Image 1: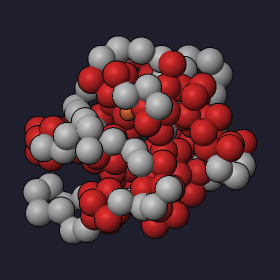
Image 2: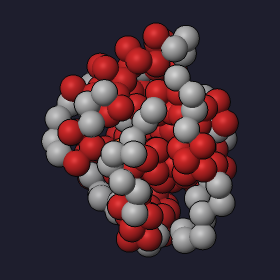
Image 3: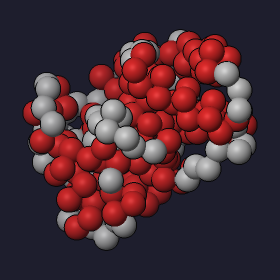
Image 4: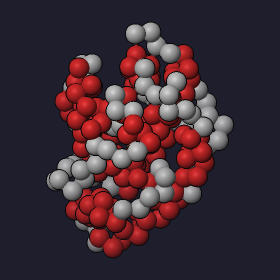
Length: 198
Ligand SMILES: [Fe+2]
C-alpha cells in the first residue's frame, strides 16, 4: 500500500501547539503503510512525546536503573497500532486492539521484544518491566490522567535501583508528572483536530 503523505505529515512535521517531537521515521513509515487513522497517528505522536520526557527524566534521576530507552520510545510510538484494525476502539472502549497490535507488528518484522508493548500497555499490574511501566504511564499522563497504582510501581523500581526511600521518589515523580500534565489540554486539542477516518 502506498504511504499517505498526510499521515507522514501528522507524524513528522513541526507542530505549532504544543510542540511535539516527531515520531521515529521507521514508525511513521509503517503507520503510513498500514493506512493508520489520522487520529491514531496524532495520538501515538502525543504519547511518544511524553514517553521521551519520562524516559529521559528516569535516565537522569536514576542512572543505575537498567532500562532499554529505545524500547520505551518504540513502544510508546506504536502501542495502539492495533486500533488500525479495531477503529471503533479509537473513540470507545475495548481491548481487542492489544493482541491485534502485537500481531500486526510481528507480521511486519518487528521483533517480539518491541512488539510486546502493543499487548502490554494496559497490563501494568502483571509483573512487567520498567520499559512497559513507562509506556503505560505515558499513555495516561499525556492527558493528565493519574493512576496511583501504576505510579507506585514506577516509584518502586526507582527506589530499588537508586537506593532512595519511596516517598522521596514519589515526590520527584509527582513533580515531573504535574509538569508534564500541564500541556495535556493542548495535546488533547491537537489530537482531536485529526479525524478518526481519513
Ligand atoms: Fe493510547
